[in-house]
Image (tube, rainbow, N blue to C red):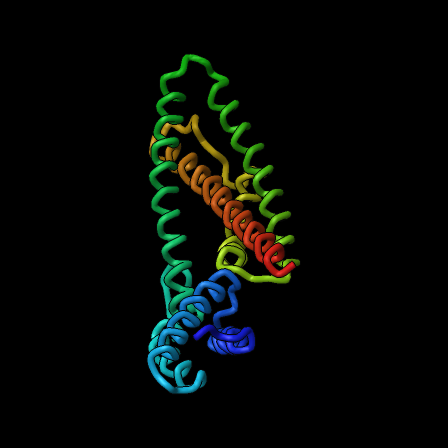
Length: 223
């Protein structure tokens, strides 16, 4: 039996009451729950309310408060799991790529006969970091103005505050990149962490892009 729009709206309201207010995830879960209720209503003579209670009881573990060491406390578990997996996967990629790039840059500098190479590389990084800083600030402001929340906007707003601060500090030279430092470990660490923040900024900008793409798609659907 196909659910009415009013019944689907009731499902959405129940999910919001359980803390699921990210539009992308709410839409996905609503679709799953609606399908399960429709199947039950075809199999038994119970009312929509009774079938909905059975389905929500099944989903209860996924709608409970939860914790992730990468995300912190969020509500509910299904949201925490999605955010955790997104961040975990990206962190692994970022660390691997940063290690490769930092090693390559340091190898290039140590074996270069041109004295100005380290300084030039440092200046390019500083300029690029400042550009990223401005982009992240702009996108962050646009996300706060957005009337909708997605898992993408939630992640960026929750986790990018520290990133913004460190991008600024790197860009203005408070935490300088020291490719000429005689200690290889210090030289490597300085470029490695700079690349980490550059790549993380790129990741958060991608999250923002996905948020705006979803927002546009949803607006077109509702139009």
